[in-house]
Image 1 (tube, one colour):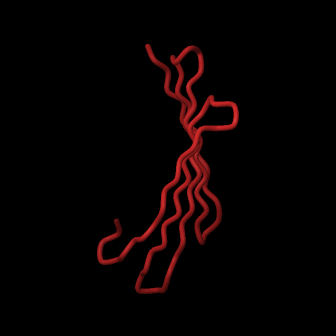
Image 2 (image 1 turned 60 degrees about the vertical axis):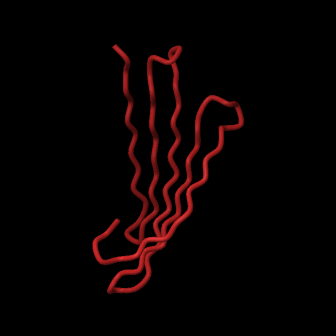
Amino acid sequence: QMRGNEIKGKRTAKWSADGSALEVNDKANVETPNGAMTFETATKWALSDGGKTLTVESTRNTPNGPRTSKRVYAKK
């Protein structure tokens, strides 16, 4: 939460069509001193290699344009 600002939002999650990943979508509306802002994020969590690799791909749409990230975690 941003200090002094009110954030209202909604999060939904569903399995991908093939059942291999969890897809999470967030939408947050933020009231700031400069007016209302909306942030939308789509995140996909997927296991592969028999559960040894977790890949998290995320895209956030902001007033400044989209921001994407991809993180891969390997179980040792």
